Image 1 (tube, rainbow, N blue to C red):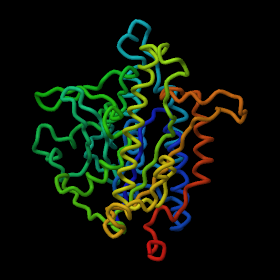
Image 2 (tube, rainbow, N blue to C red):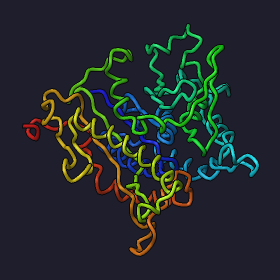
Image 3 (cartoon, rainbow, N blue to C red):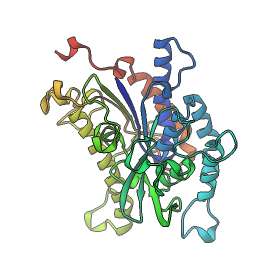
Image 4 (cartoon, one colour):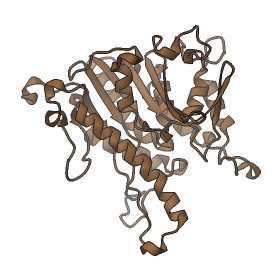
Length: 367
């Protein structure tokens, strides 16, 4: 059985994701009697968008979850270094601070920057970004057989520094400047992978693994392919409680982009639950529920293309235990909320993540 791990974008809320990953890692270590097991030993493909791409790259590098969490806590404030006031009309934060962090941690033994084709990557890695020059999503993997990974091409993705791909995937518009990548004589600008349909990259990861055009050609089926998809926590975006004629342009601008991104991510999740056999997932809405076993209503369980587990939580809740406190400020750069995201993530993981979610349903439960 092939395994895919998919990690959503969400800025500093990646610390929420890490709590779920820590629980999965602990369960697998206990089950297999391997205290040093890392998730790169288990998952055959790790996909990530934006902050999820950072975590995915570190996991594929062979790092334990606890080590990645330490990096997030220690370096989170450093990665959000403000531009001087006279540059903030371009972007809020410095791109070179983030780039320096990536260059420091993804290097070869001789000190040179690691490329996407680095042998230090212990498993398949998929990074999502948006080519803002061509207007197209770019899923970039280290699969040596991929069309754009032919070493003879001047635009071979395997020859691009890993730090540049991560900078591109995390270049959230207005927060960070775009990242430039040069492919031979061609120059492109890239922005955050969240500005694509794949802020939740679970479905594109499945397609990358199974569609013949991507040249991995893994078999599809409930017992052949297992997908674990993890969010960063989300909120239900809404307009302020005003009379319709009082809603202004600023109100709508604050509402539209987060609402669209959340809706697209939810749609990707719903498609995965329908095309796969969903063994765990929170309720999508009151009408369809969680679509656990949802493939039975569309394709039939024998035609489900993969087994699927989705972990995420609505975070419309107070930042403290005080029920009268204000809800969490879920802005992607709200570093001060990282301890709250840790606490919420640990509680969610303890209550919801189970070893049986990491395997296909047993025959008795299917029947």
